[in-house]
Length: 151
Figure 1 (cartoon, helix red, strand yellow):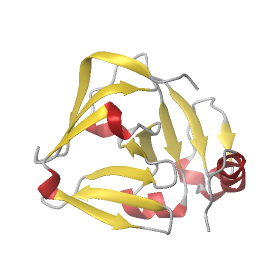
Figure 2: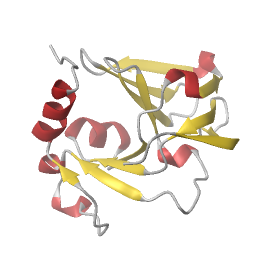
Figure 3: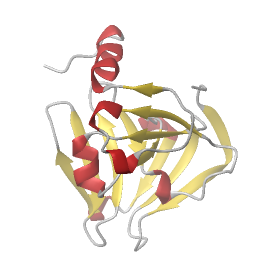
Figure 4: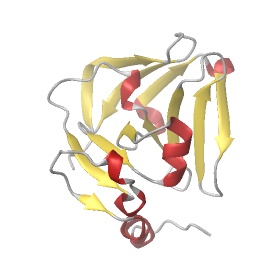
C-alpha cells in the first residue's frame, strides 16, 4: 500500500444531499474493501473506503449534519443525519478516518488494493479483483503489532 500523497487540487467529496462535504489534501491512493459483519450491516454491502486519513489531511464541512455512532470501544462510524449516507469509519486508537469511496469522484488510477475481514465475507460478496486478502484475526494482529489496543 502506498504512502499518503499530497492532492493538488484537493479531492472533494459529499454525501447524497450535500449537507456534509469533505476536502482531502492528502491520502493514500487506493481503495480498501471491508467484508466484516458490522460494515455490511451498516452499509448494506461491502464497505469500500479510502485508507485511513489523518485528521490534519482533510477539512469537513457540515458537522451539524454528522451523526456519530460508537460501534465499539475502538471504532466510530458516521453518517449524514439528513440523507443517511454513510460517511466514515474511524479507528479511534489511530485517530484515522476511512471515508466511503463513493463520496468522491476518485481518479481511475486508484485501485482496489486490499480486502479485509474476508473470513466474514458471504459468497455473494466475492470480488474479482486480485488483491491482498486478510482475515479479521490478521487485521487485528497487525494493529496490535503496531501498538494499538482493542481492550
